[in-house]
Image (cartoon, rainbow, N blue to C red; front, side, top):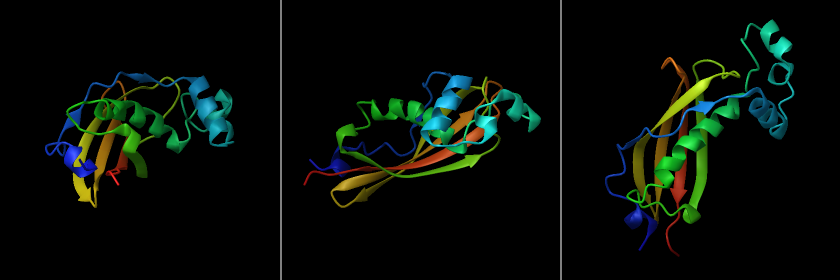
Length: 152
């Protein structure tokens, strides 16, 4: 069976809303900033972040991937989606930021499966993760392309 045959025909259009709330901590921001070599003081020092007008430490822009991937787990683990994670290649990732992510944020993400396209023996799945704060206000939109490789 090829990947395009195993990926659910009705996958496009599905929503996944069950990801737990992600509480952004200072230490998670600092760890992520160190990992991606983001050295701006606002990522590491609360006073530096506040001097720039932020309530707390500011996450590097790519920190949104942490929240998006946690939400994507619901899609990947859905047995009705037909995705074999051992055959997945992360092909593309884009972010639109509506405001900076800061320590103390309580974020939720809804995964939208926007498209599924046969690609040779595999399939390209495009997802959109809408990340919002505790008040429901938009924080970031992440768009991902996942290639599910087909059998050789």
